[in-house]
Length: 385
Length: 231
Image (cartoon, rainbow over the protein chains, first blue to last red):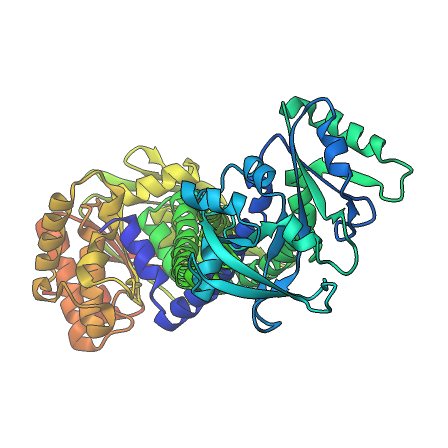
């Protein structure tokens, strides 16, 4: 027997109470783990962004287009290595509920800009040379069961052709993926010309520019030069780093970090109050036993440590169970969610922050009972028996 | 006989609101090593308070408590805890065993404060339980034992670290006559055979007869009565 035996025995002396406390802590950390994993994927755009990549959008809003001519004008600026462009197609497959994230791009420069996208050489060549080719991300292809050689129609909920149709027919000639699981492979792209030529309106317009600078140190200079070039024009621009653009894109749905903080914070505050109060009650019930231990010669600091350890052990136990359950749930959901949340997993950073939080929760909830236990007056406590 | 305790001008009182209450004043006495002393007296006479002062779990208002040259009343809380673990064994009226621990684990508790190895602790626990006749109940939890058996476990816990003195506060107060006699015989055995000094507070005159001497505490003063211990 050692102190750990005593701590363990005290912790589980009332099994129902211990189980309920563990469950409440488990739920808090389950929420933390799952939301942390979602947030990690949500915010990974910034981390995945290249240092030297800038995005230029219409100053009004990134959904408002800009003239096609901007592409060549930006390419001529000092410090610009390559420029590509993309336009939002807003496609769906067969039914409006089957949303397919699709962009019309300049194939050659787009694949130069996003060198992290990988595909077999023959498929790459096919995409570059085939006008009606649809280059599909592996996750998206998996979602709809598409493979190279398939012919599919995609309909746009924004654009119309001259003939009044909103349907573009595509030949899937290439499927891309990326080595890093977090690089999205849940969208598709096709030739800008194939999209632009039959358009009934908004012809010769671009959605946004993707600029690769020759040196990340030149980012500010290039961004300023681009925006100054189009200042006071009908389509003024705003150029930011890709990381800032991705973050702004994610935040259009609301301040996700703040929402997460609020949800997790509420769960933790509730648990802190419940566990803290229960621990105080549990230690008060044991005042007599603590007095006996002191009588036997257990020094006050040792009793303080034992009570605090009890609380930390409980919190750590519940926390690890919660994080473990979160890991299992995320592992089960990840394959299904790959199309819209690529690379969904419980990051080690979230896991370790969770472990740290569970220790902190244990320390906070155990502090008051530990101080109370340390201060137990032997004579008074024994006299109450 | 060498004296184990020397109490000099010992006073203890407390305040309740604005009122000062004196329990006893200027008690002076010695307790020789190997003594078995019963302290009797009416409720509120200060018997338990005196026991607490001897055990270093309470401090006197004035005067001194000296045990083999150590001024117990002057020790810091930390040193006092260590002193108690090495010198004093406590036996309470309501046994005060840890309900979650087995009999053996309860007895082992004071040994966690020593540097003994697990094996040595196990041996000591076995010996202590053997002395009180409960070797076969070492795996039982307190609620699985009778009152008398629980008190014997408490005695084993009190003697396992081999203290010089056993302080017993109404050790038979919660027991039937037969169990009480068994406990008192065990205490007598510990006194006679193992040389433990025992100070026992009791209300029960028949329990007091097991001691070598009785001290009556009344109105803050001692009246001694030496007797032949009961057989």
